[in-house]
Amino acid sequence: MREKLARFMAGRNGVDQLSRAIMYAVLILFIASVFTHGKLSSVLMMLAVIGIVYMYFRVFSRNTAKRRAENTRYMQRTYSMRTYFRNLGERWKQRRDYKFFRCPSCGTLLRVPRGKGKIKVVCRKCGNSFIKHT
Image (cartoon, one colour):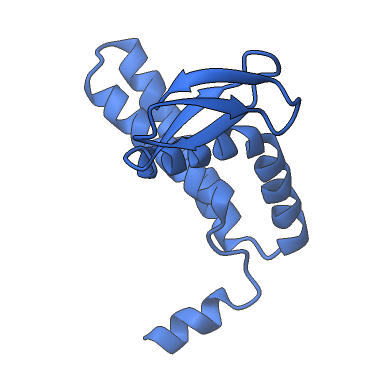
């Protein structure tokens, strides 16, 4: 069975980041359509069905060059948002060991160890120094 699926998917695009994003959007549309009534519910359901069709079209497409170009455009357009949330997650993981400050001059995010009392923080980017309590 696995070999049949592997042979079927050979030369096809498969699941990439854009397909996953469409899948999550479809899931949100389905959930929203359950909690709404009337025409809005049917419109959301129709958008979800269109999203499913497009997602499967992308997954089973043999025109991998075009699908790869679409995925690259998606990744470039969402780069800043993905980087923001990745950095936010890293700050969350390090919150017990470090305290984070923004430089009042240039706005650069600075990381200093916790529990050192009042310290002089020097920005590596602009050289501005300020005193903060950690």
